[in-house]
Image 1 (tube, helix red, strand yellow):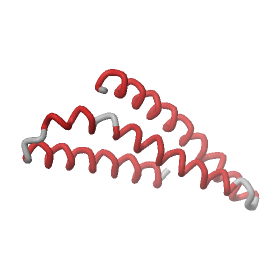
Image 2: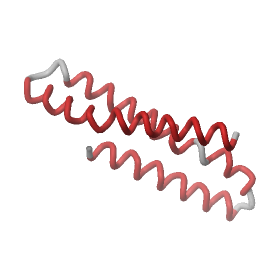
Image 3: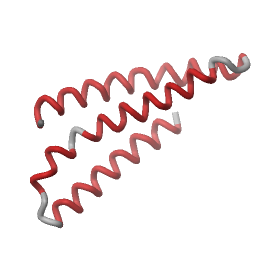
Image 4: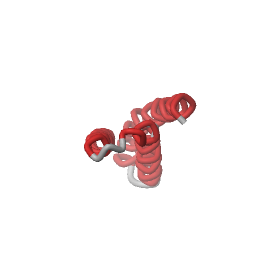
Length: 93
């Protein structure tokens, strides 16, 4: 759960800082192409976290229990970010 929080916070921070820098540089026309990247980055990062959790399923019983718990919150995060990316892509690109 900590890894997912760090992932989402990092993506939001990068997008906000990138938006501010692009606005200050006078390149605000690029912002509509930057916005759909945030859910995509969360989706890809969540998929990578899910792959590491799948590896834990081959571990001890404690690892399997932890992996199942982590996958229970990573899977909905993946689907929500995928849906947000799809909607943002269709509306902004």
